[in-house]
Length: 399
Image 1 (cartoon, one colour):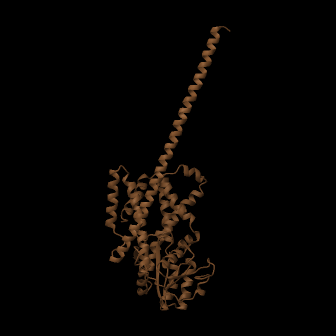
Image 2 (spheres, one colour):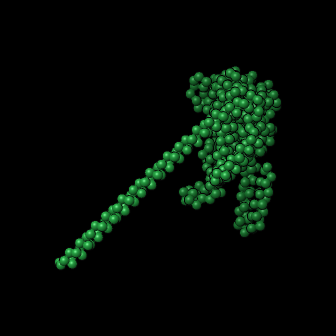
Image 3 (tube, rainbow, N blue to C red):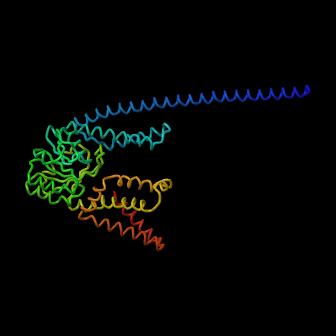
């Protein structure tokens, strides 16, 4: 090979070496930049973590002030909830958020949650401060159940000495498996058992004639009518309640509690007094009106959701496939029906089966489904529009 060949190979080798060196330097440089970028991201995340901690610390400080405000309200006799003040707080938050370039809806949602937490804290503090129990005794029959447990916690927070009678507990201090073993010497007796057995318990209590206040919390009153009547006729102080909220409820503001006078207005007034420290909305209702309306409020809504997930389960379509095609309406319906599906099926059967008025809403649901099918199958667009318009007009009268 000549000199020119050597020179060409040398230039080629040098070029390769230079190219490798350049690429290596670029890679090293890019690597440094990439490493620097990672470090910057970590720094930013650390700063976010510090801000998050400050937010939590501010929430804790806010809760301390909330506690002081609650005590001040209690001393001065002011109501726990001030709707005008809440509106001012939310309006101010939205306005300030806009000035700071923050979504006003986000600011309102955060403040709404903080307000609810504050109200729950103040409500619980007020219940404890008023100490309506003051060492009195309460027996919760069915106290190991979900709603029974709620009443155990509620009465305990009021200063009652609570005793749980439930087949699901281990016998011990303040616990017994058979309510008869607990005796009847109590200031308050709550029957929080399944409706299928509550009626008989009420009848048995009537024979024992306790001197304390007695009330049930059943979702239906039809199966309890005879037992409640037996207590009334025996001269016992008896009333009937229906909490329109679940066992996870912490704040009673905006929640409804139905009071049913079964012929002993004094007892009904005394039961209401047990909740006077809360912000629960009291509804007075007759026994017959209660079950007729509950047939739609609970019976129809439950049946609709059961029909929805039954139709899906029997459709032959895989749940994951439907989930991938989900829409806003489908997701909302899935959320509600999923909660129903996970709950106690025997309790749902009682609500459907034990209500004297229970068949009317089921018939109405079947008739409505048949009407929808008829107008769709016949291509009756005007008929379909009329169905939706009728529903829209009815729902517009809700408030």
